[in-house]
Length: 299
Image: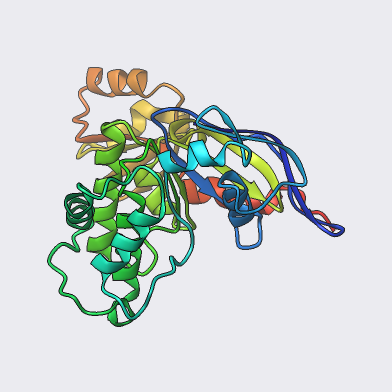
């Protein structure tokens, strides 16, 4: 769905994006992460032809961008930073203008498509108040509704949950998962690591303009080599675990082990009642901080 090769952007002597190779596959829910100033937003804008690259190539839906923009962009829904509206008009009126502005939006089905998009983002019951009276969260929902008008094959979203409360974030996450299950690939740029961890199947991390990681979320969050065991038989479990035991926290033992199944078998065989066994994994936040703190930053 998205592929870049050596994608680079310079402003004068400053390299903002430094030869990155993105690989977003059909069906992905792809998280794009990076600190402020890492080149994340510039990369997203180059994917959509809003900023021209200095070097490298961009393909979206298998076609070269920005050359094929007229064919590609009608199949892409996008929400980039703060969406712009006619502030004196209602949300519905704004969507009518947005829908009429591009190709592929049948006038006959316009009203139905707008109502469906508004319903999906839970704005269908909003009155005809002007957008200038909307909260930040409502404006984000309206921007997402605009991105959904054409039933896109690809959604490119930059901070889509900005301004939403926890319930709103959950609703948008569930909507994106539903859209993805129905065939829409989702590319999500965000600084909310927990949201990306909950939503995305794959992710990439950019730092100082360089791509420092790109893989499945489960691979990025690899096991730490530690296992947490909860049991009422603490003393017996400690004896069975032996030198692999690193610490005790109440009825929880933390042990070094690369084979949780074998450890569980040994404990149960010795008569230990195991009520919980968890393979410890790094959080996405741990991975992100490690990659962005240790990556080389150009001077």
